[in-house]
Amino acid sequence: MKFRLEFLTVLLFFILTFLVFAFWNDWHRYHFYWHWFWQAPFLLALLASLGSYFFRFWRWHFFLTRVLEHQKTKQLLYRRQSALIFLSGLATVVTPLRTGEVLKPWLVKQITGVRASKTLAVVVLERFTDALAMLLLMTLGVLRFRLGLPLLLGVSFLGVFFLVGLQFPAHAEKILSWPQRWLGRRYRYLVRKFLNLYHQAAFLAQPRFLSIGVLLGLVAWGVQMTGSSYLIAQVVGRPFTLDWLLTTFFIFSFSAAIGFGIPLPGGIGVAEPTVAGLLIALLHVPAGLAVVATLLVRFSTLWFGVFLGLVSFQVYKYKAR
Image 1 (cartoon, rainbow, N blue to C red):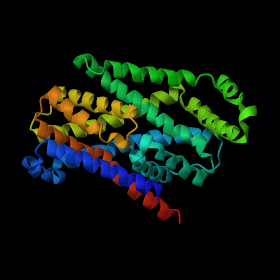
Image 2: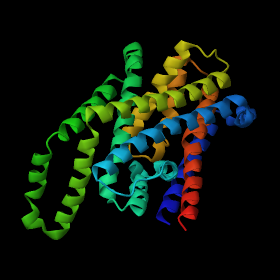
Image 3: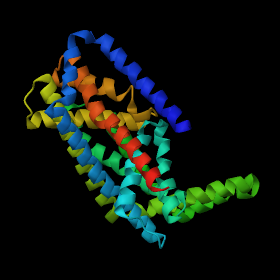
Image 4: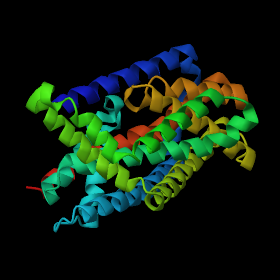
C-alpha cells in the first residue's frame, strides 16, 4: 500500500510537471507530436532502453553472484530469477532517494536466505558505478562547454570519499561499536546490519569487480543515451552527427548527475527542465520542440522502466505462489 501511494504521488507530480511545461510552451501548437509515440525513432529509443537494461542486469547478476559466493550460500539464483528481481527493481526508481530498491535484496532473501543487509551492497555498488559512469560521460562535455565543473568535482570528491571509507573495516567497526554500551540493544542491531552492508560493499569495491561494474555501466548508459539522442534529433529535425551525439551525451549525464544529488523520485521536476534547458542553450533547439523531445525521452526511459518493473513484479509474485 505504501509503495502504491508513493507511485501515485510521483505520477501526479510528473503530470503536474508535464502540464506546467505544456502551458509554458503553448502546447496546443505541438499537439500533433503525439504521433511520435508510434513512430520508428521512439520504438528504437525503447529498444535502446531494453539494451541498457540488459547490460545493467549483467552488472547486477555479476555483483550478486560474487556476494552470494562470498557468503558461501548453497542456494544460488538462476538467471531467470535474478532477471525478474532486477526488472522488478526498475519500478522503485520512483521512490524518494530510490529507497524502494531494498525490494531487490528482500526478494533475494526469500530465495537464498541471505540477509538483505548483505546483498544491499549490490544495490549500493550499482548506484556507485552508475555515478562513476556518468562522471566519465560528463568529462568531455565539461571540458568543451566549460559547464558543470563544480558538479563534476563535487561528485568526484564524494566518490573518492566513499572508496577511501571502505578501506578501513577494522577502524569502522571500532568507531561504530564504541557507543554500544550506552545506546543499548537496538543500536547494536543497527550496527550489525550496517557492518554487514559495509563489509560486502568493501568486498565488491575491489578494483577487479569495480572496473567491470563501471564498464558495464558505461555501455548500458551509452546505449540508452544513443537511442534518446537519435529520438531527439528526429523530433527536432537535426542531423544525427557525432557532434550531436556527444553534446546530448553531456546533456543527459549532466541532468543525471544533478538527479543523483537531489532527493526527488526519478529526478522528476529536475531532469525535465535541465534537459530541455540545455537543448535550448547548447543546441539552440526551439523551446516547444525541446519540451516535446524531453518528454518523449522521459517516456522511453523512466516510465518505460517503471512499467517493466511493475509487470515483472507481478510475474515474480505469480511464480512465487
